[in-house]
Length: 288
Image (cartoon, rainbow, N blue to C red):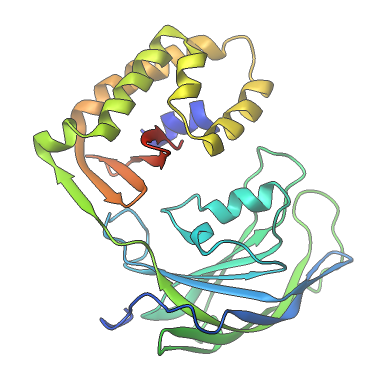
């Protein structure tokens, strides 16, 4: 289901973690080197996702954002395609996003936040794993996260999509949680939820090749992504969309849960695929 949606859409540690208060903001000191370009890193953000939806690869996911400028804390909300990655694609932030299980620190996933040359290219991600912790002096406690992280790429500048990436950063940031689950809807109630109602309307519009209705049912962010996809799509895109709509119509019957976190929601299918939704104004909209 998720792959189908992407075709159309371009596509804890221990218990006492609580939302950090607005005290000292996050700070970072260091640089990110991309080929011959040096980017000062000055901002740090941290967020813990509890994985209540059961969709992440990690039991819990600590997200540490080290950036060259301020961004909203909400840029770390979500399941996989976080808002900060869209900001990076638009050139509105540069830096690195680190993801790891706070209880098993030997592996970390580091995503380069830098606009790729090709809009359809995935952001570069390094997997750092070994017998030693993936980050130096990582301390989690008192509603804050601090530590050091570094990587050296000694292969020299490389042309093309994957630049040589080196970084060395010290950071300290308040620790926030993913917004709390405000509803966990199952069974018949899930089928009757407003999010699934929007999904049914979206499927109908797909089957009819109705791009205008699709646009109205879709969030501003997802519409921007869709426009880039449609601009490159060939003449068969409408038929592809109709076929995808028929497949999704069958998948709707296998919805297992709808998990709502305030203004965000995820419709989860029996095969663990999912669809994202966001509340814009007073209306729920597809966010894929």
